[in-house]
Length: 145
Image 1 (cartoon, rainbow, N blue to C red):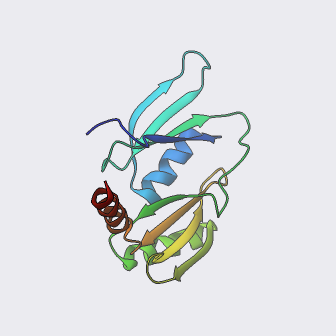
Image 2 (cartoon, helix red, strand yellow):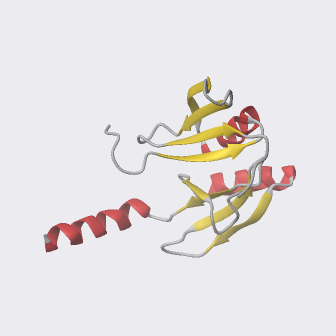
Image 3 (tube, one colour):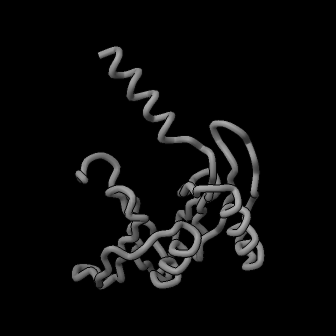
């Protein structure tokens, strides 16, 4: 793996442990680094799905401003619709399901929005075929160059 390209997104959170639990449950992410930042004395955790060199950096903040709202969101893909349905049922029971599940066909797929503990939006999806779309674009660029 190489640390090139898009490597992370940082989110201000009010409770790092609550966010770790949420993203473990709804995005299959695990802590890969956790520390108290010496400069700011803030609790900081890096979480990853371990599939590529990309992390979400969770930074404890006294006040969370600028939450990722439905149009600005994080997205995670699942292997099947059943997982989306199961997670939507759990999110609905917890009162954090914002929208879905919805089936918008190719290329958007089957998706739902879930709200994390600080109001940031997570999209869970199946069937978006992002890797296929990126490969097509890469092939087209390579043909031109």
